[in-house]
Image (tube, rainbow, N blue to C red; front, side, top):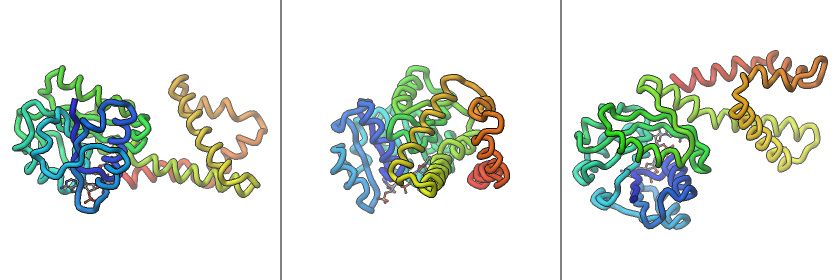
Length: 258
Ligand SMILES: NC(=O)c1ccc[n+]([C@@H]2O[C@H](COP(=O)([O-])OP(=O)(O)OC[C@H]3O[C@@H](n4cnc5c(N)ncnc54)[C@H](OP(=O)(O)O)[C@@H]3O)[C@@H](O)[C@H]2O)c1
């Protein structure tokens, strides 16, 4: 199956890497059109996909992703639509438009998916929220799902929830990166080397996430399991509460979502 990409910036390149890692597509079957800054050309040198310049070159692609800035998506789709074969699946990962708006531009021979991924798709551990056009045939939906699931977990959500989903899954990696850096700063302050601190912190987060997913325990229950009476961990938890950690995180989601 041939897959196309319009846009290979932060998100486009993360998805391209994930698809190649998962062998969902070979470099020969991957057609990428970049913008004007040379980002796609640099990525092509590294990954060896087919770099293309014209929308016409997408004619072999059964699935086309669009990963450009939100403001230009509908205009680009208008230009690309005449060159898309019947039954092409168009997956937009851009915010700021609805499935219906994209469908109106593309016509009903193209199947539209609106998916909001996050950067861990590059290592196939993404969290992707997806809205499928209501009238999409089940075989087409299965094909789209198979490709998206090669990048991580996919949750079908309503269009109304997609923005909040994108904030929680898409913005939070940056919040977690700040948290990881702060944990490592604390470790360095207590004498640990910077490189060891980052290794310990990243593995701790991976393990904590896996424990939550596999046990399905409430986060409070998992926290209670680590905090022995009068122990050091509960003193750390109290310090986080004293400094408004919980509200800072809630406010980060709220600010990012508006
Ligand atoms: N980053 C995330 O974590 C994330 C998460 C979820 C959703 N998204 C959504 O994904 C979209 C892309 O975000 P991003 O962070 O990847 O932005 P980005 O790094 O700015 O990438 C956008 C890319 O689109 C390219 N482009 C512009 N016009 C084009 C055209 N006519 N044909 C082909 N490519 C064109 C640009 O190329 P040049 O720079 O070379 O011109 C740029 O590489 C946005 O709509 C964003 O809301 C991002």
